[in-house]
Length: 400
Image: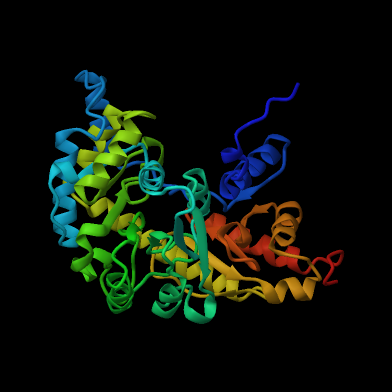
């Protein structure tokens, strides 16, 4: 007799980014030459001084359970980071350390949402947001912000979407998948809307904060709108900034009541994040940030190269971003020219005929787009773009 799984898990779908990565790995195992531009993972090694801190933690025997919400040393480093970089003041009771910012976001949804509560999610969005809301028995309300508005939510859209059931807004800037980010003035305008709706809690996902080359400095929502302090959870981590994806450390600062509830959720699931990783993250946040700046310069160079290369492909349109390591291409004209049904079909065409793995934009709430990660070498990106151009003009393709 088949096992019937919960209705909760039946509501969600596997991560499309992880699915693309898995598919590319399977084809490589079969002997295919595949360039993977699906995963959001820096190709740099964790900086040596941070890696050495992890090794030092093992040698010193820092391998036991810690407090569920994080070590005092890491909490203090996070408090100092928020004050130094964002002008935000927190105490230890307002900080939670988790096994990646993904767990932080999940904790927030489960701790806050009741069945039927609505969570506003600007689209294009990171693939996991809607499914996390569904797992928490909430209702994702996805608001599409297309290229015509720079992939950014407007105050009018936000105001129109808020209902008596609205409980949460998830705001990601710089954004995965688009690389777009809100200016301080744009955040102030969104904040004015939110101030009129005191029941709405805001979760700001600032994971890509240091990967930034905008004309003005990075600004978090709470930095722009300090009056929202009692209702905002500011989320960040070390994965992207310090090339520490596998170390799995995310963190947040927010209202004591909500952080306490999130800690309770975590205490009944994973408990504390890795003690070794917490020690390394403390060194990362407290140490010399030159390693972050060096990686950021490389990402900016790759960004410029990839955006120009994508805009040179037939039927592709790619707006420049101001951060992250993703390019998000509008391929609707290419789909029409090729006679393809959707972005999934084009991604499959590129995988099979170019050996290039990209993620369909429909997985990010933006049909007719493709996301490419440029967290790899310029040499690899050059070859990927060459292969894509050839595949888009194959004699046997629908265009031919």
